[in-house]
View 1 (cartoon, helix red, strand yellow):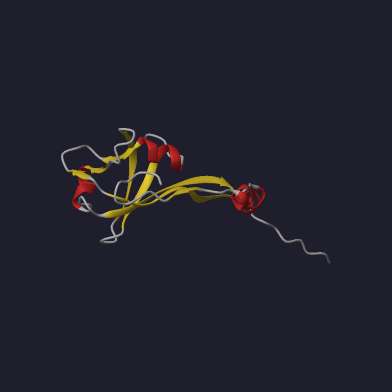
View 2 (tube, rainbow, N blue to C red):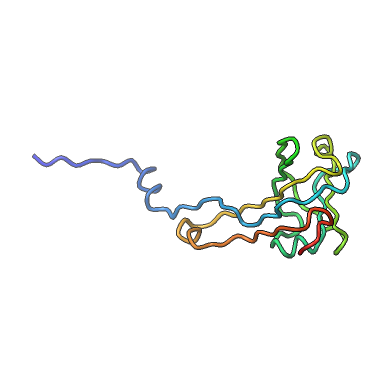
Length: 134
């Protein structure tokens, strides 16, 4: 007697569907908070030069990691004045970030598992004194 193993429909779909994963797309490593604006709706305002170099666009979702106190928030990006070095946490995030704190800004992307193996993120290391590219 031959026995057949039945695979549930959901399992067939799971194994035949290409897998996507979330990986690091962009990183601004260690910039200094220049402003914290509690009375704004929300977001982070960043110098447009930093955004271009890190391949981050306006309205993109990012995580902001505070090196000083370990706070980690998710928000969206607003373009700041090019060359200004601005890094302003707006809205409720201003409770966790103060001017002078050093932060890391990261953005992620969803992509096919195989494509992710060869993808190279944009990582920049600005001068933390001026928040400008070196």
